[in-house]
Length: 478
Image 1 (spheres, one colour):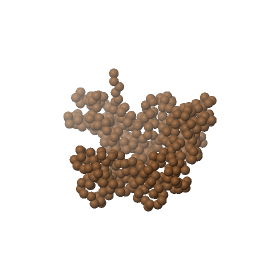
Image 2 (spheres, helix red, strand yellow):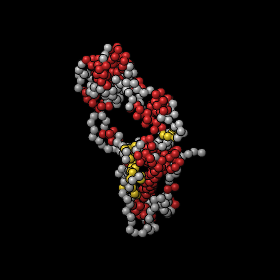
Image 3 (cartoon, helix red, strand yellow):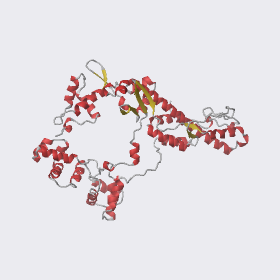
Image 4 (cartoon, helix red, strand yellow):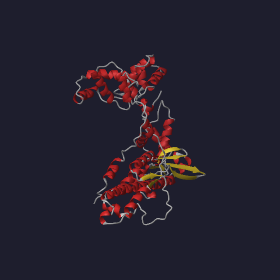
């Protein structure tokens, strides 16, 4: 026995996963690919339906056996049209091809600077290869020995490692400052050596060259003792270092497309009015779709005139029938998607009603995928797809749906609360702590125990890591 998904089911699953912005692009792409689909509401017909009316869901093409074009005659789950297979396999990766006007990328900017330097043709090819290996953060993550081997064996360029290092030093002089560094230490040093050599800059260079491990671990007392610095002097030196950019490539900025794709368009809008919550779907410009009546007329002409039932005409009508089926599948999948999203979000609003009314994170109830699945009547996998990459706009901001899901923990009284409430207390404690003596995980666990939350130290460490809060040693400041 095998579990197989029909093209309709695959269509529905793919559409269910898309957020609002990508759905808009997907609908536009379908409108371009399928001439049968049209925007807007279907214009009602004035005349009453007769025997020539064509129903997409129940096609009534009759005639001789060789001219019968019912869906079952040419389409089964094992015999899907080629255009449909191509659409199913590629629609997840397809993006709308829109020309954007954008400035040069980081690599183009570096290659432009490379062309302005007085280099030989061989050195220029080495420089282009090095620039091609620089990542988006502006780092060269590969050592010069590996680059030398690649140039010899892949590019057929016989070069020495010293020649690669010489060209690399030229590239490291480019803008943005700190580019093509092989590690964080080198990146910071490249930026410092380009500054005016004030006493603080010279001292910062000395710290990064000889005491970088102590600096990374924030062992400031040790650095202060070795460098014989006063408290104010150490603060000025550290301020000089922390003002540097650890990721010079990011400062270059992204393209217009990257900015566009990083925008958040909420899929749901929850509003509060006199203690009552209202939920609405954000269509984000997704148009209503209907099937073009012109193609229905083609079937009516084919059915009403036996003289037109030639082999060529049959092939044309068969192709249009495929497009009609694809259009109906797409419209049905969109309708089912909206129904699924609506019912799922209604369940979340009911479960987290107190939060939507107050905006207080401590009011969030423990909620997992299973809770929503049981109340909405869907499978857990469906709830997971709905909650992925979807956002809701509330009176207190825009939140991802995953924000409302959390596990539960118990207090001393046995009451079940959301782990988000515990994380909120930890976050507030860390934000108000004395930075000269940060709160350790053990102290956080003891503090939570005093408040009635029975949380082990290792659990505190897990929550702290989930919130991207460093350990106490790395939070220390002067």
